[in-house]
Length: 253
Image (cartoon, rainbow, N blue to C red; front, side, top):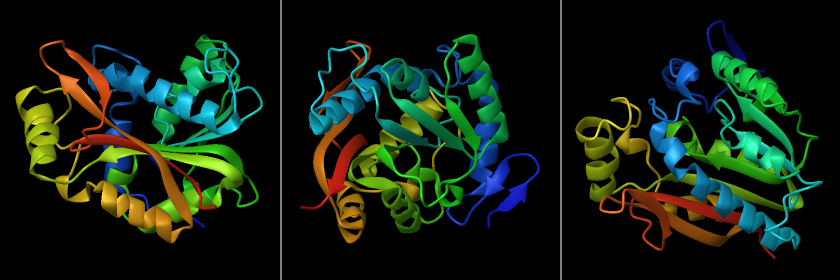
């Protein structure tokens, strides 16, 4: 059973209370595209298209259809205020968004109500999800670099996948380039993110992530980097996974 934090909600072994508190303080700004979550808004269209296309390939759907994810159950772990939950609900998926921050969940519910969207938001952790629940798509986007125990966290994520399901993970690579760009550049020079948003030693390399997934009987089937072009002032998908990257994994054949 998870412990209970009065200010932030449930706390489980993989959860770092300091990280929950950090993002709880930003709950009022999640949906402000010009606020402290602006970088997430900038990359969100790329995240959405990457996840949608991977899901459509896996489940043989037409990605151009406005209801291409109809009938699929999606779990968004560490959903914040629902920046991914809402667009995937609009694409027809049954979305469950979980976050250990009570203020984030409150902000998510408020925005969903204003948008007239029925989303199952829960202030809980992945460890507290009923183990009998199963999902076609499990997402842990920009989460594992904030947890205490990466292998245990990923193991719980994998346990919630249907045998035919997929898991999507987005995180930050750990090398000199990611320190220079994601920490020094993004937090101290450009001030895209509040200082202290990330801890470089918690970043996970693609090889480490793949090893963790392989240990859970999963295989990486797709991967992509996210790269910022300062001249064009935009983000794009890339084979360069030196800093931000995303992977798709499924049960090994």
